[in-house]
Image (cartoon, rainbow, N blue to C red):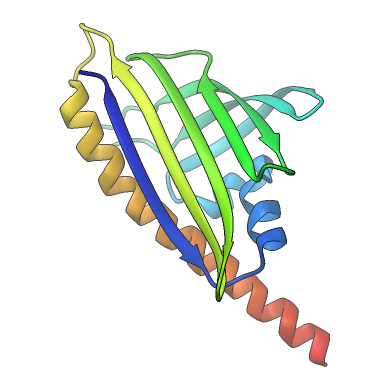
Length: 157
């Protein structure tokens, strides 16, 4: 059975700020704690192809892969897929943004399957993604809310 995860968080900030910060791929190493670098390979319209490189894991291994990400501002959705799948047979991600009272809800859905010879199975990866998504979503929320406070403070002064 393939892996499927859904995680979300509400950010106490306007949708435009949440959208802009989370779709500024070049600045993901400052937004996510797990990414060491991002290299943009190609941009075509609303689609960006890029290489993500993570910080070394507990065993010192550095994971890196190429993804393709397409934004749809009107629908407030982003779709992404790994082009270089590594240990995954496939990895597809959807980000959805919804204005809610008090801010913006950001919802991540990941659908994937591990290759038979991958070092972990679908269940292990599902648990790992769920654990890590919560950490990353909280970090992202905190950074965006801080930026929003700074913007509002600067506007008042």
